[in-house]
Image (cartoon, rainbow, N blue to C red; front, side, top):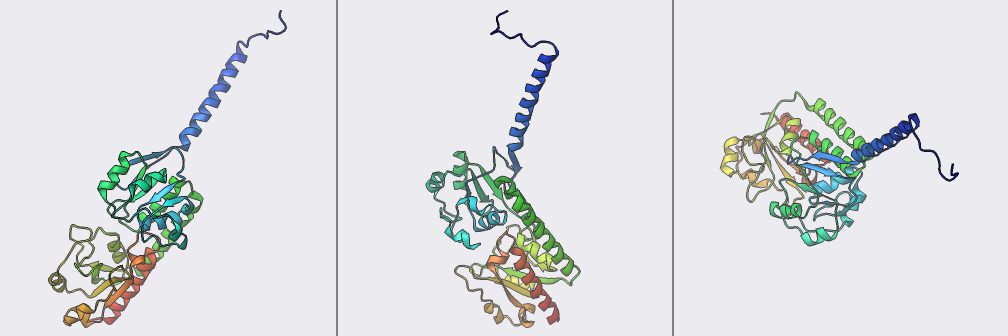
Length: 308
């Protein structure tokens, strides 16, 4: 027998070797499959990533804030104007604003994920991003618990679950405490003014309306179809709300509700129930909305105390 030639494996030894290779192959396949990230976004679209995103672009200020809340702030390579929270967000490169994006700059940044506000970005430009094959994830919270869900989803997409899950749990716990504190309070009919010219409000499907419900408020325009419908002064007078709540610190608006004082017989004016909430707190779909909601709840408690 040639000493350089070893006998071939046969019988049990061969079966053991084959089984070993199969086990290794299955283990590798399972690990590869486990590395795939699959999620359905708020537009009902299925997104699949081969691995956690490392270069992320955010197309709204609230999504930038959610990325930081989920522990993925260092993955953000581009964002839009007014992304000012937290402080680190101010240093991220701008690629336009929510209405007008610099598509060439977005492509040049080579993102492996773009986060989009479903109802807040220009759809025609978003279609171009999709045509380029860039992974896009749509976000559109409609209820306060959706924010905790969004933090968890972003943590999964970025591979930062260790930070995202505690943040989501903390949000859920604080929300539950606010519900416990304000459930059962007497309802207060209110008009929520998000802009004055034209006069804009929110309907019952808007996230702000969920904050209103949390506080025991009743949105007098909840039944309108548009998320942010335009209403007339006459419609507000006819609804005769017990309170009017506006937003402050909005670009181009000083948050002054004094114009309503020319109708002193309206209940909100007669009872001095004209209130303001910081726009960044109540209008952004982020954990800070609970700060805005808590301020709103305290204002509605004042309206209750003012009585008839």
